[in-house]
Length: 285
Ligand code: MN
Image (cartoon, rainbow, N blue to C red; front, side, top):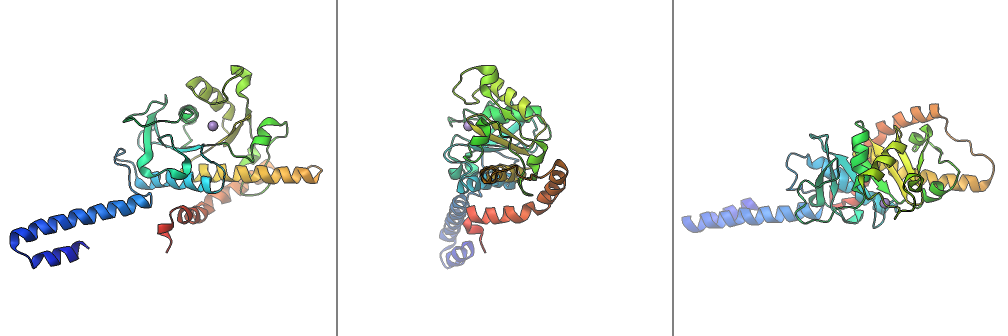
């Protein structure tokens, strides 16, 4: 388009030609920006130095979890800041299905936004800030109210690994009960003390259930945390079915869990590329 406009401009007078070429470039840039924004790939102007690919992972993760019904109007995906480990990135307060790269903001580990510019932030950002504080190995945190896990958050039946994709559950899934130390609350992790308590119950595990609320999945990458959030929900639904059949299900052992989870890492890009094309259809070839 730039070339066409420039070629056309050479047929005009010299002064007019320069002005026209300039206008052409501006139009082309505006059109390109609009196109990128529409496919949610535009790097956020407020986050210089952050790889657009990481912002895209947060966008893809938020949207695919919404597609799967693991999150609805609520829930969030965050990533530790790639160059400042004492900061993290998550969207402004917004339904996950609507998140674009431009909505992603930077926070410190006390949950304070670095440059809020009037944007509303999630009440439960302390889930993320306190887990990043407690777990240097965690690079991404996902919080959901996934319908599959709620029954396991309120019953005495532990969530256990049913098959190879959720093998990461074989190390055990703790349940955090907000009432234990904080009495009757709104159930929301709305301050740092609550987030710290949740992070302590998570311990060194990949997933923690929250009684009467949902869960948190963490990982060494955003892709892995999203994968774990999705398969935790799938596992919970299948485990409820297996339990309904009667008898004790034959779960994965911790040893099988370790081996199967290594395969999950190896095949991550295959499933991620599928999810990416599903939620960013302009990428489909
Ligand atoms: Mn919540």
